[in-house]
Amino acid sequence: MVKFGLQFKATLENVTNVKPLGDDFRWFLKLKCGNCGEIPDKWQYITQVESVPLKGGRGSASMLQKCKLCSRENSIDILGDTITPYNAENSERFKTMVQFECRGLEPIDFQPQAGFAAQGAESGTKFPEVNLLEKDWTDYDERVNESVGIYEVTHQFIKC
Image (cartoon, rainbow, N blue to C red):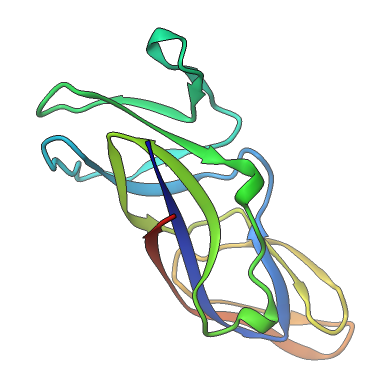
């Protein structure tokens, strides 16, 4: 069992506290089989609300997957207590946003989509529907008459 951290990096303009919203947030990942190296073409998502039991009574995971190439059964679990927001002081630096516990899988790519939230850095205005699929997001904070945005979203995975 190996833990991988998803590190998030973006340029924040007048916003802070960028985070996934709710336990049903979908983490879209590409996963590599640790046994044979197979990487499926399609994106797969995992959420905290989905939990499947592991064979042999070894607990549960967010997703259980059988490799199409080598038939090995692999799993990945979201470590919910590791989810942390990306704040204004983190802007333009990598910061671990979540960790995954993997058995036989390695996350190799992440696709941010809808379901993020942010708040105005000065005003505290809540922005509950932030979609990062295009790697950029902009809005307007009427409380302080400023444009707000999240730009140049990128990521990397690290072993924890």
